[in-house]
Length: 321
Length: 286
Image (cartoon, rainbow over all chains, first blue to last red; front, side):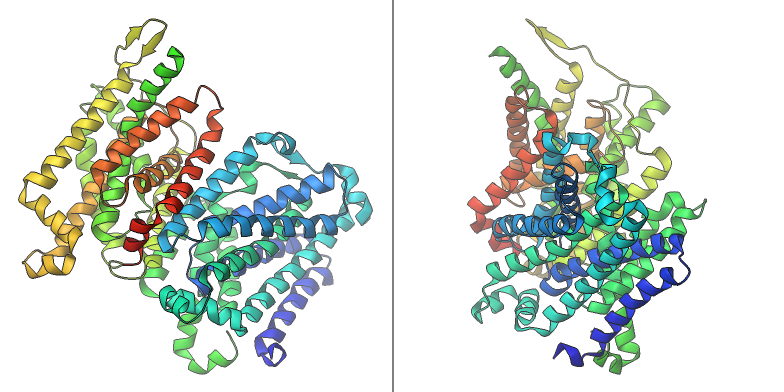
C-alpha cells in the first residue's frame, strides 16, 4: 500500500512547503527560485523512470518539455484554449508521440537507444525550426488576452506556480507508485538483464515503450505551463540541450533509481547552478563544474547522495526509496 | 541536371571528411565497446586547434594537420586516463556518462574561452572551374587529406605489429591477453588514434565552413549515422559510408533547406538500425 509508505507523506509535506513558503510573505523572488527547483524535480524524476528504473539513457528528455510547451502555447494563443485543458492536451499529445517514437526506437538496445535519443532531439528541433504554424525559428508569443481567463497576469503567475507544484508532487508520486508496482518490477528486471527478463515473460518492447511514453506526460504538461508563464517559446529555449544534459547530472548526483534521489539531486544541483550563475567569477564555468561533478559521481559514488546515505544508515532504506 | 551533379561531387568531397570523423568513432567503438561521447567536442577542439595554429604560423593550413594530429594523440591519451580506463567492462551506462561528462567540461571550457560566436580559418586554395560551377580548392584538398590519413591508418592497422595488436584486442581481448598483449596499452593507443582522427576531421572542417564551439555536435550526429551505416568496428567501411552520406546530402541539398538535413539523417539512422538489426544487436549485448 502506497499510503503506508513514509515517503508518500514526505512528498505531500514537500509540496505543502513549496506552496506555503512563498505565500507566507508574498515573496515573488522566492517563488521564482522555487519554480525552477520544481521544474528540475519534474524533469529529473521522470527521466529517472528511464535511466534509473529501466536502465535506458535518454539524452533527449528535454524534447518532451519543449514539445509540450509548443503544443500548449499553440493551443492557448492560436486556438485560444484555457490554460488547464491546453496543458493536459499537450501532455496527451506528446505522450502519444512518444509512444509512437518509442515503439520504433526502443527496439534498439542499450547504447543504440541512447544515440537514437540524441537523434530525436536534433530531429525534433530541426522539424520545429522549419514548421510554419509554430513560427519557425522565431517561435511564438503568448498574447496578453490569454492571461485574462485566469484573472490577469499577476494571478495567472501564481496559478501556474501552484499547478507546477502539483505536477511536481504528481511526478514524485508517480515514481513511487511505479516503484511499488508489478510494472515497476518488470522495468527493474529489464534494467538488470533484458534477455533474462524476456525469458521470464516480461514483454520488454511494450514495457519500454509504455515507460517512455509515461515519462513524457508530466514534463510536457510542465512545459506548457512554464512557457505560458514565460510568455514566449522558440526552438532554442524549448529544446535547450544543456538542460537535457543537466537533468542527467542531477539524477546521478542524487542517486539514480531512487525516488528521493531524483528530487534531492534536482534540488541540490539547481541551487548550485543558481549560485554559480550569479557568481561573477564562476558563471562562465558552470558547465565545466557540472561535468566534473558528473565525472566524480560516476567514478567514485555511482549511487549518488542516496547511495551514500544507504551505506551510512542502512535502515534509511525503509523511509527513503 | 548538371547542378545536381556538381552538388553531388561537392557532397562527395565533404563526405570524405565525415567519413574520417566516423572512422575515429568506429575504431573506438569496435575495439573497446565504448561509445565515445567526447567525439563532438574533440571535433570542435580540432576546429579551434586549426584556427589557433593557422593564426600563429600562417602557413598552408593542410600542413598544419600534422601538428593537429599529434595534439589529438596527446589529447586522446589524457581523455583515456580521465574517463575511459576505469569504465572498460562496466555497464554501458557508465561509459556513456563518463565520456559525456568530459564532453560537457570541454564544451564548457571552450565556451568560456571562445564564446559561442562563429570563427573561420581564412585560408583558401585556388579551385577548378568547370562550366558554370567552381569546385573550391579547399574542398578538394580536404578530401585528399582525409583519404591520405585513412590510408596511413590502413597501413598502421594492417602492416605494423602495433596495428595487429589492436586488431587482436578488438577481436578477442582475453585471447589477446593470453598471447602476451597488454590490453590496457593497446586500448589507450586505439583510443588516442580515434581522438586524433576526430581532431583531424575537425581541423579539415574548419577550412571549409565557419564554426562555433558547438559545431562538433552536428558532426557527431553525422558520425553516428555513418558508423551504423557502415556497421561497427569497420573503420574503412566508415570512410566509404561517410562519402555515401555526403553524396546523399549533395543530392538532396538543391531541393530542400539545409535545416531539414538533421531530420533526414536521423531518419536514416533509425531505419538502418531497425532494418539491419541482427549483426548490430549481437554486438551490443555481447
